[in-house]
Amino acid sequence: GEDVEQSLFLSVREGDSSVINCTYTDSSSTYLYWYKQEPGAGLQLLTYIFSNMDMKQDQRLTVLLNKKDKHLSLRIADTQTGDSAIYFCAEGGDSWGKFQFGAGTQVVVTP
Amino acid sequence: GAVVSQHPSRVICKSGTSVKIECRSLDFQATTMFWYRQFPKQSLMLMATSNEGSKATYEQGVEKDKFLINHASLTLSTLTVTSAHPEDSSFYICSARGRDSSYNEQFFGPGTRLTVL
Image 1: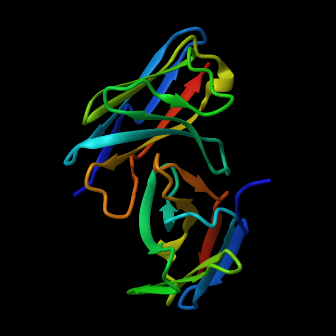
Image 2: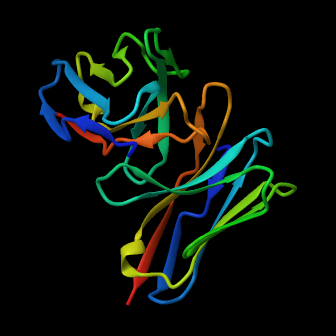
Image 3: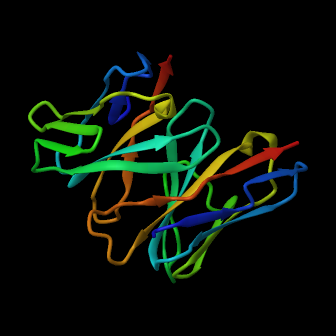
């Protein structure tokens, strides 16, 4: 199975909060990341968290990290239609800098 | 800052031909570049890692003679799909990591859609 797992789909109403969850297996990852991919485009880094942190807030984004359970979440407050995209979590930080991506969560924001 | 470009954005070729995709870091020196392949509605699959001036390291199951990677300078890496076949049709994405990366971030290019007829 995959080393990084995510739920595949999330539907949310505009203005509500979105929560995307991710579990990973490599406890030695130095950083964990959230990337956003819009249709036909590459990946855009949204935020990252250092592995010794529990939480990071960046404007509408809140990242929670539970190292014990190897669980990472991304909360988007006041979700907008422009937030519709696929969100990937990734773990990384080995000596090569290689990332392991989850399968991506498609977020659909409805009016 | 930290922009990565890819060229071309889309390419259609006949089966049996070779296609070259370029990945450039526009405003930083990319000591390491990564090449990924993404199938529809799936995650990114790492194909290979290349460091400037070194041979690329390929992931298990990726044919190095078919997917030729060259990282000739700190701002340019190329992926050549040789003797392309329809099953090579995919979205190819490169990423780059700079020398001074403070949190090991990879900056991604916009991707290249390859269609092999």
